[in-house]
Length: 444
Image (cartoon, rainbow, N blue to C red):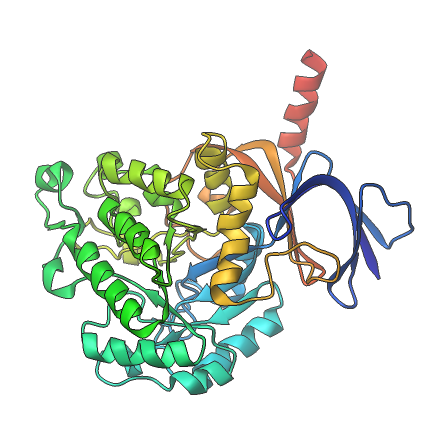
């Protein structure tokens, strides 16, 4: 069985290739068997990709799948569907489930279930400490033996610096990436949104930027001491981005990610204290910080775009900022938002988007992914940069709908996702969309 992709614009950072090509995929091996400017061959299926980018399959380093224990919010099946619709072929699942994934058995449970679903390559992240209680280290080598590639205490920080130092030493020895959620628990003090004019106007506790910056600095110094490969999650503060730049100049193995909401929105965009779709952690920051995130991406200081996809049941988001849960979903909107806000605005070119959403994550994690060359795994995202649409949560295939982009117009859309040679998602246009297109063509 084979698939031909015709006339797509191949964007491959691994070889710095930007060229219109035909491509043949061997479905049995799940690999790319041929790439040429023109191929005349019989295949079992042909996908017309004229006018589309052929990106290496997107890799999201920061996803909450809520499985085990929180499946009312999301589960491996529903969030795999959301990932495939968003163009993702690999995702890292965070360990703050119930119970936390802190053992080889927990890693095995998620990996086995994800393989049965078969829509996205799910790599489970292991908790740094047992039960995520910050007291005793998890069996990090044992989880590594089950295919774990990273550890994290995501949702909070390991506040015991000595314990984290020990974990980083083990991670460095075992070639494991450390994903750091930077939050100084002693400074949060009940904060629910960025400390600023909006928090004061709403009369709610604010979250200082020092909450993030303090731990960013600490973890960078620990990475310098241990030689561990450190990745700073969901950077939102300008100072944290600057610390990453300085640390890299000093030779520290540190990288950082930013989420679309932190390079698009600010705390001034929050319309009401009751609109909890804008509540996330880290919180939406100031316009200064938002612009700093975009500049950090353009300058190559921040090298990864992740979602921090955090599904919640409606009751979790009920009430107001003082009572609702932190977090928004992002798998199904990330690519379109990134293209609209960064590529079309000149902060990234298509090659840069491919690097931030696929190639760089693969390199950081040591994965044989993010490369669309002959013989490589056929993880492919076919993306139409000219297709505009309106974000509507009712169209989401993930279990939860909590996000602040309802009704937002975006340009650029995932039309096909292929994981290991298997088509896992295809855009199906609604009849009314096709009728509208015909009417527009007739008017011309």
